[in-house]
Image 1 (cartoon, rainbow, N blue to C red):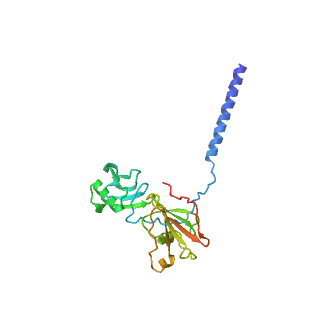
Image 2 (cartoon, rainbow, N blue to C red):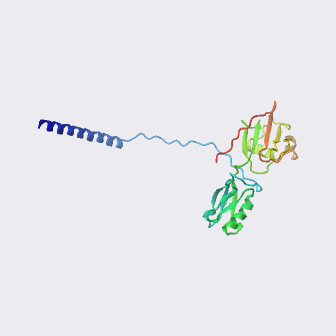
Image 3 (cartoon, rainbow, N blue to C red):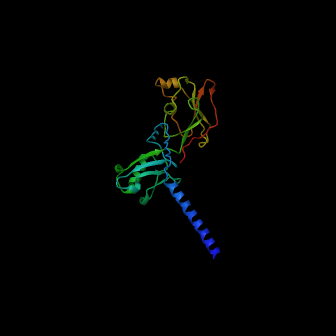
Length: 231
């Protein structure tokens, strides 16, 4: 009999201890916690993304912005896939590879069964081709998105600004021509002449061109380091 009472007493103590622990947990949950301020990081101002030129031919992985009123399946951002097509949902896939925004607009209109005037299409992100800047005017070799044919001085002014001490003989454009199977071409840009209105040496850039900007010690050559935006 004493053994039974002893066991019952021990069980009661365990039960009470369990209730006390639960009570402490409940109190802890209800106790006020110090507020941790949420810090929103201040982002540096971003430069506006330059618009692609009207004759820019899109390829993978460029991104298009499309709007077709009344056709939500055709509206929004569309990636140009590796096969060169964009997905229009129920209206199928439209070939965009090598086409300008105007040409793609007509193809979207045909697929959606609407007038081309109802379709708006633009290149939202040119991510497929680059030109490379090396030397003065750039902190390090950079890959700049190619948005279409553009004079070299215009790109330098937009991206970096031409340094005041950059002289007329200090910018060259190197075109490797590997895919064409022809020798490398080097174009000297006469900045003084360009500034005076003579743009004959202001080379129109092509994809993969290298822009070498010289310092006081001549053209700075460096291994290229791509800074392509992640998909």
